[in-house]
Length: 310
Image (tube, rainbow, N blue to C red):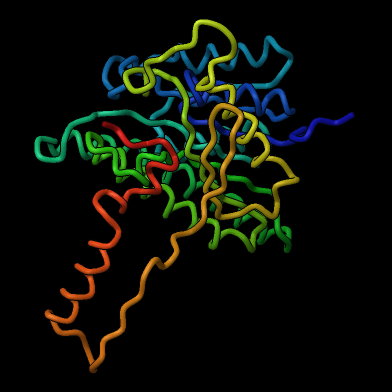
């Protein structure tokens, strides 16, 4: 019996540790040949000496389990190195079929004290890193599709976060980057659909070194509800042939739960009684509307997802 991803090749970025590692292991378990990318810096803030160790260790783990994997230790936030990553997959496996973007760093600070460098570094790794790999993978799939005269196989799974929904007060750079990734994903989904490629995003909630100071209640027994292993099956599913009709979607996933988020809907609509609004008319309408909703009700969606930080 063949495996769902047998004969397919994948790239997983940030796959030396945490979520990326278990995602790479899951894709390999399902039959994919995997390029394991990780820049290997020890600090979750993107500091420290880069190392081949994390990527090599995950690739070795895949091979030890009978799978196929090679390591890549480049920085996906660097345009040239991202191109080299995609070219490595194509050169080694003949083609690229699946791209899972996961690499990221944190540099948390309140917006009134954040430095330019703290802003730029997080946007660079998360948002630019997602764009860089997507750009070269998309070009590969477009060229293959044109050469074949038909759609080809392509899957993109991007990593966003619930932080972009709730705002995450101490993470303006991270929240902005994760919101940008959703926009990148939906744009890519529209652009590449005709070539046979899907693009979806996940908002995983997991206990990793990126979230160790947020999710502090570690269970003493049983499977941790926030174990990264809860996220990997969704990535495998979205990467598989059966998910061909799932495109441009955003999922929240953790602890045996997957939620599909709706696109934003109009909550209220106001029409002017003349050609255009006057200040007085808008002030009366808007203040009355939000007064009726009550304090804090604007962020009800965040509460439903359990995100509000006290």
